[in-house]
Image 1 (cartoon, rainbow, N blue to C red):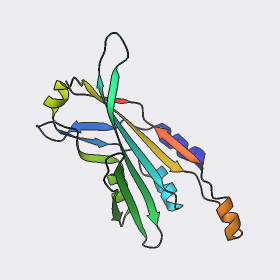
Image 2: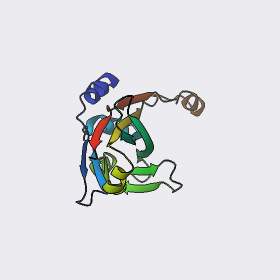
Image 3: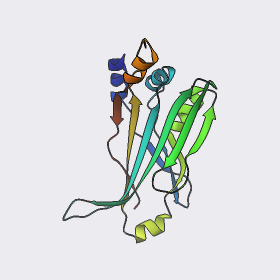
Length: 179
C-alpha cells in the first residue's frame, strides 16, 4: 500500500503560480497532485499536511542568490469521524494570528482547498522591486503520516504502538519572477 502511494506521489506535476490581478500584489498557487494518495490517508483517519514555503530572493552574480523574508503557510487536512467531515486548518507561521479552520462535507472540496493558496498577499510589485527582490522561490511539502496499527489488542498497546511514520514528498524550488 505505501509503495503504491509513494509511486503516485513521485510523479507530481509542478505547482501553478500566477498573479491574481493586474495590480500584482497577490498571487495564487495551486498544486494538483491528485486525490487518491491523500484520500487513502484520510480514509484511514490519518492527517495530511501541506507546508507552503515562500522566500523573496535577490540574484547575485558573484555569489549565491540571497533569499530572505521567508513565509511558511501550513495546511492540515484530517477526517473527523464524530462529525463525518473533513477539517482543514490553515495557519501562517510567525504571524501572531490564530489558525483558521473550515469543515467540508466532501473530501473533494476539502482537497481542492488544501492544494491551493488563493489571493495570497505578497505586497505590491513596485515595492518588492524597489526593495531589490527579483523572484519568489516557492516549495511545497506534503506530509502524510503513516498507517495506524491494524489491530489494537487493548488501549495500552494501541497507545504505545501508535507512533506514526512520516511520508514526505517535497516539490523542488519553483521560481516565480517578479521582474
